[in-house]
Length: 86
Image (cartoon, rainbow, N blue to C red; front, side):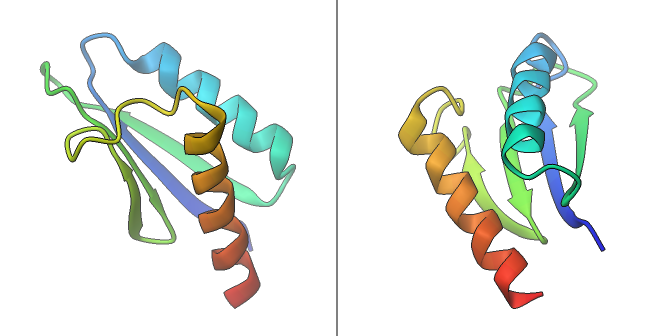
């Protein structure tokens, strides 16, 4: 069964950032993730990523976008840990 990764992003312009992250994660974990994004109906500034129900990245809490290798690797580590738990 694929691991659930959810991204809630600001519907007023962050869809491209979500799609970039989705592609990068799919390339890193081919066929192992169920990645779904949800754009908010108004401007929120959100870019929140949950892995298996656990919030692992939050722009609203100061993490910004997933725009550096270290931020991406933080998500990769969270996904690997969740996959290991089965």
